[in-house]
Amino acid sequence: MAGETEQLFLVHFRLTPDAELPSLDYHGDGEALADGLLLIYSELSQSKLYHRIKWQLPDGTPLIVAELSQLPKFKGMAEGSTAWIRDRSN
Image 1 (cartoon, rainbow, N blue to C red):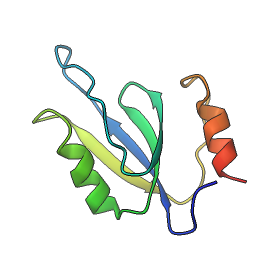
Image 2 (tube, rainbow, N blue to C red; image 1 turned 180 degrees about the vertical axis):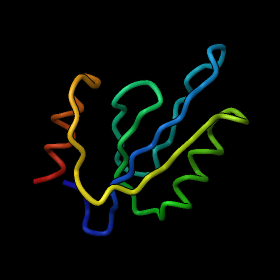
Image 3 (cartoon, rainbow, N blue to C red; image 1 turned 90 degrees about the horizontal axis):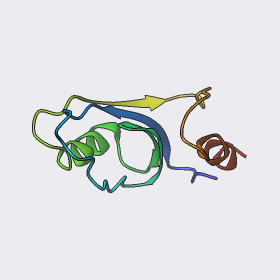
Image 4 (cartoon, rainbow, N blue to C red; image 1 turned 90 degrees about the vertical axis):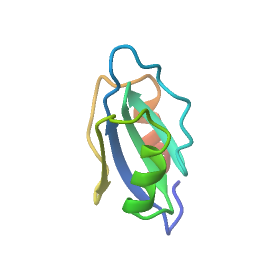
């Protein structure tokens, strides 16, 4: 389960077709739902997490970091991602 001071963020970025997916430091407990779509529990502020992710991506990569006030509902994402969020919501 995520810590009391951690917030849940939805992160999405889109790489160009010729760019390789970098090995990202999530700066927290993260799970990839799909290529470029992540859930991250982090103690960082939204702004700090945004910048730390941005600095790891190729220049010009579109990026959004959104703080979630509720657990998201989803299906059809990467194997294990539903169990990951359930384990952290108890």
